[in-house]
Length: 112
Length: 110
Image 1 (spheres, chains in turn cyan, brown):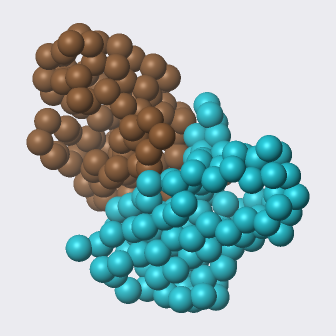
Image 2 (cartoon, chains in turn green, blue):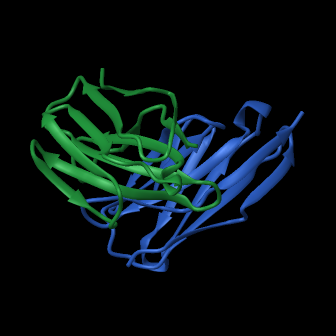
């Protein structure tokens, strides 16, 4: 069966520190991968999506970057976190345009 | 750009009631529409996916309909239970990504 793992579940980081969130998918090949941020009352904002290894598309200018070093691994990074990077980060995947999207359990990121 | 709206933002009903959640979108050129459930502090759980060529999908007590021409979808929940309390989100896919509504927070009162 297809599963998605995202970690850590919670993270508290000081302003200016680096960030690395990891997401892995099992049970499928060549998935589309997504990083979202969910802010209270504002819904899900798509940050990055990837249709293949090394192929990253960014939806909004920001302080974050994403990488896909392996087919089923998606990493969200930052060199220096800002207070505005606080939020709930969600990784997701689907098997193609007409397939349902499945989400990880999310990472609650707090910047101090 | 696709915009997705969900009304109401919050809904409270007594246990056993049937209820309808609404989702509207501005661009009818979509491949599919998906309904999700989100519990507090958790990720999203996929409930139903409706392809653009379909009119509805059913899973247990849930039934989702799609009227692409009018840009609307509804999620019908029959015989609601306290365990149905959660935020329900809809999302439309016009191409390479999903556009999400801000959700309806449902509370089912025992």
